[in-house]
Amino acid sequence: MTTSSTDRSVPTAPPRSGAVIATLIGVAMVANLNLSVANVALPEIALHFDASQVGINLVAVGFSLGLAASVLWLGAVGDRYGRRRMLLIGTALAVPASMLAAWAPTVEVLIGARILGGLAAGMAFPTTLSLITALWSGPPRTRMIAVWSGVGGASQALGPLSAGALLTHVWWGSVFLLTVPLAVLAFLAAARYVPAHVNEGTEPVDNLGGILSVVMVGAIVLSINFAPESAMRTQAVVTGVIGLLTAVAFVLRQRRVRGPLYDLHIAARRMFWVAAVGGMLVFGALMGAMYVGQQYLQDVLGYSTWTAGLSILPAAVVMVAVAPHSATIVDRFGSRAALLAGYVFCGAGFVVMLVLWDASTSFAVVALGYVFLGIGVAIAGTPASRALTCSVPVRRAGMASGTADLQRDLGGAVMQSVLGALLTAGYATSFRNAIAASPEADSVSDQVSGALTKSFAGAEGVAARFPQYATEITAAARDSFVAGQHAAFLVGFGVMVLGILLAAFGFPDREEEHTMLAAYAEADAD
Image 1: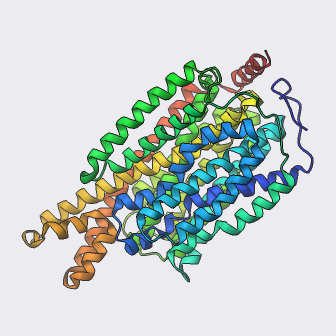
Image 2: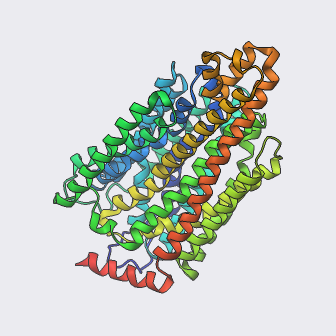
Image 3: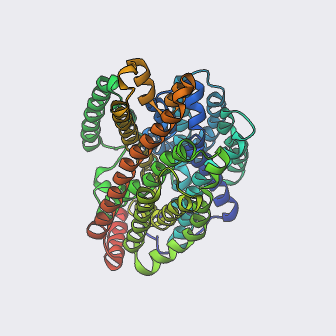
């Protein structure tokens, strides 16, 4: 049974709803796990390919980049030509993309495989929330979104744990094969349980707008990643200019085309754009912190891949436990209260990381930082996604789900890129200062200096070549990494403060929220 935009208050659910939501969560888990499985393997990947910190950043962010760049376009394609069809194609393509990443011969091929996997997820992932929006309504929809959001966030957190367990026995490429069995099962379940056609549109797809959106997001994210490397400043400027120009072209196209890919009139709705930006901040915080944290745990604290992955488990547990209560908070106190609470907990997580994570931090303190982040994401994720889906007509569910995916993927890509750039710049600056202050500074060649400041893996390589200085080099590398991550976490905390201000002054209170939703439903019914 489906619902229209005019009867959202009437609770509805599809037949075999349990099997349907389990299938949709399974499809989403393929994407969510792939977003984070690479993080725990980054130190081994860096050593295997002798990759720079920029290369490591792109391996980590590649999947998010492919997904973020494609969700708007492919979500609209699903709205028009069949959500289940896109679900099946994307889930099927995830298998060869994962296999290519596992056996990539070079870091460039690995980055390309990660982007390809993200594009495959761009076909499947947006349809999961679109179908929840189309198949459920009223309080049941809020509960399904809470479950979808909580399990999705937890599966992202469980990615490093499962990958860490694998890496204690097999090679780094195995982490990319984790989702292959799940993708096969999700494909079979989707073919059986997911309805073929649910409130799909008839308007033509704005393919030119779709191409512009892909170029826009891809260029901006690449520009952020290139910026910290002095040898890549030209590429950073060129991709940044391309991103800005295509962003202008995209907006002009959406304002003039009859059937826009991204309806700017709907996007201008207060509940929609505030929720979109707010969700990007909170989901990006989780992904950015996990990205920096996994390298810190292995490089600085010397954790094994298993222990590093295990540190995420408390966050996954609290996310699953807390997410259902987020729906209760939304129903009783409104979305703004839930968003504010989420940002406060995320901010507390960054404070722990900023103040207490150093070269001798205990496992309990590491886990505490992740727990605060997990609680924050679990509470804020539901109102951020719900506000989007309830602010648009059901026929444009792909726009809402695409934006909800952008919350995770573009937010994750940007936050990982920004925090990674700060980490790279802070590490290099700190190590250069350490070299300059060393009594042996005059004997350090430019080649050796470049290897030391390139990445932690580069410093380890130099330490192996000069064992008489290995202790000093490793200590300097650890201190430099901590200096870089402090800069990253400080910005992460600042972003959470920005989120608090956005929710407090930009999002409506509970009564105004209900009034706005009723007005949106009436306008969409005309």
